Length: 368
Image (cartoon, rainbow, N blue to C red; front, side, top):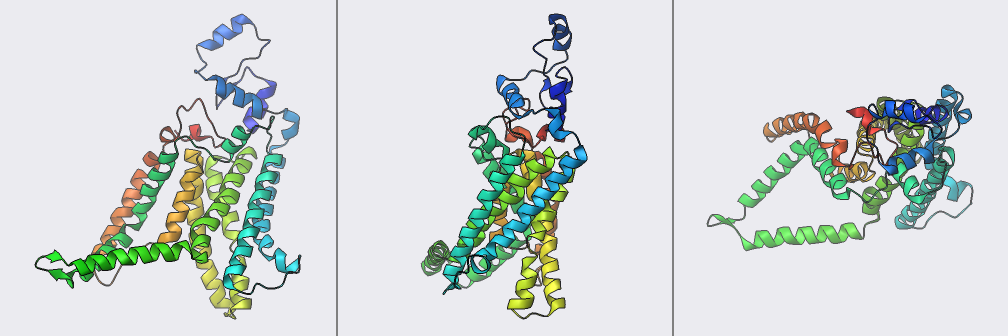
């Protein structure tokens, strides 16, 4: 966006996003000379360029823009955690009388934090015109290419759990062997499996913990730590690769409150609490980088969201098992397949109609 703003004062320069945007006062001869060099761009891309370009004086210093972006991201990360304690510390509300009430209160706090972050981000970003579709596109909230944004990232993420799937299949085979009748599975076993699935669906639907793990936490975290922070960091002048590895730092810092909860509330020893939280920070940084990569590549918030929900559902991948070495082999093959398909399955061509008609600010054209 800073590049776009700089081109606003000299429109005859070449934009890395939409090609050359000629000035209205340029001569016809100059336009003809540039016509052969200028790639085809749609009217929507030109309109988006005009909406988001701002005078250069607003971005006189790239260091100031970068500092402002980092400060805004840090503030959103701190606020995301701090707002959870507002009802007790600021509003002086009585402690909740049940775990369900406690979680519902936290759901409300997380929703408030997400809305505040979205509003703050919209005020900081140099949006020249308040347009709902443009603003939602900045956050990666889109309806087009929805099935691609749900299916392809889900398949890609599932490759990391090849060892887990293999172990569960082995467990199912062991259980089915006990119910074999004349070479086929007994009706009793099939009914028991179906009843377990139904019971799980019902219990999950009415479980407040399930709503936290599969709905509220993934949705609010992706809105704050990906949809808001990535456009801010890109607008601050950070490269796409820097954003992919910088954004997870804020995401991991938001989990430091677990250290206080383990040490103060659960009376865990400080070294043990540091060990547990350090491990949590490690895999949150890894997943945060992966989620940021998906959003930058696809420009679609549904991509990291479905990956987040799936990872919360599956837990940590199974690397090995004492039951069989096949699990380790399956895990290794899955990881090799994951890295092999990482770029092809996140190709911007799968999630956008045309690269010269960019609907987001995630600069996916630079990843070619």
